[in-house]
Amino acid sequence: MGVAHRAHRGRPLLALLALLPLAACSPYADAERDVDAGGRGLAKLNPAPKQAYELVLTLKDAPGPFAIVEGVAQYDASNYADCGRILPATGTAGRITSQESITLRKIGENEYRGTFYLDRRLDEDYYGRGACHWTLTGVGAMLRATNGRADTRFLTFVDNKRMENDSPLTLYYPNLIYPRADNVANFGASGEEDPSGYSADLRDALFSTTTTVQKLAP
View: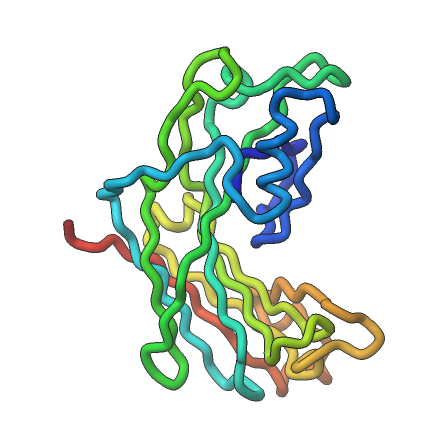
């Protein structure tokens, strides 16, 4: 995914960020269209990244198989206020965010692993206001039972603070919404860290994902 502007939000989303298009007359319109088509827009990859990490996703008591298990790394320009494009509507620069897919390999019956890099993006001057400096915001995964678009998206996301503290994230999800939620197509299930967050009738039918991030030796 490429450079895009976003308003501030709380929890980052996984591979579903709504990208705000620029006006048709903007010199950056082509880059924004590239982003909408799945490209990186103005962002460029570091051809020789060195800061390698591994995302480890472990499932427990899954109610069935998952045909789709995808990982994602989210990067943000830490100095977007100084380097980003000034938005006419606000007179300020919008947040600059970009995502990169992480290929998750199935290692065992319940485990997936994928490599990502902290320095995957190149710092560059996109808007003539100075270089934008990319930082990794976090990594996560999305699981679907089948290729069907109506199936539930089971989501997990580990932010950079949790990564720095070497703290795994375990989330619980109700079996009730596998493979899909009744009357809600394409439901995004973010899970609960505490099973008691679910009603008593659901607590005996939960499964979990544990997401761990570890630094790889150079």
